[in-house]
Length: 161
Ligand SMILES: [Fe+2]
Image (tube, rainbow, N blue to C red; front, side, top):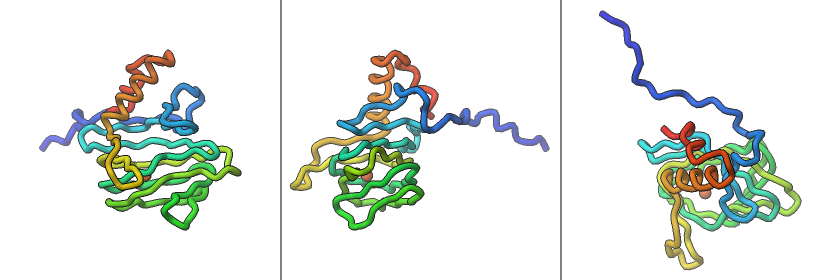
């Protein structure tokens, strides 16, 4: 019997997670950026680094699917929870979780790895849906930013599977 070749496997990704080139960070909101690592169209999932500088806020949102986070640098909290995520913290956000991410003023910068499945649904103060993100909106944002900053729209292709 012949051994398997695995010739149909997708190519791996191995990159310096915190990039040397500032242009790799995609602006998301005032004082908020993300750095794509893996954009998975088959599972509707994405892995990225989130970078937030002091007093930056990631608007209130709902996760219909699970999220895993690991803090590489700095400190942050959700307005909706008492705990503070510190460098080295692991965070699990179960389906149904609603929160607003905030970085305290005494923290220059936080960087956290997030593995997100499905979507993020942005909510107003009355829990009404006001926007969403998924792997496809993330890819679109990357393409637009990389085209504008000179890296080229196809720079994002290396992260897409
Ligand atoms: Fe979240």
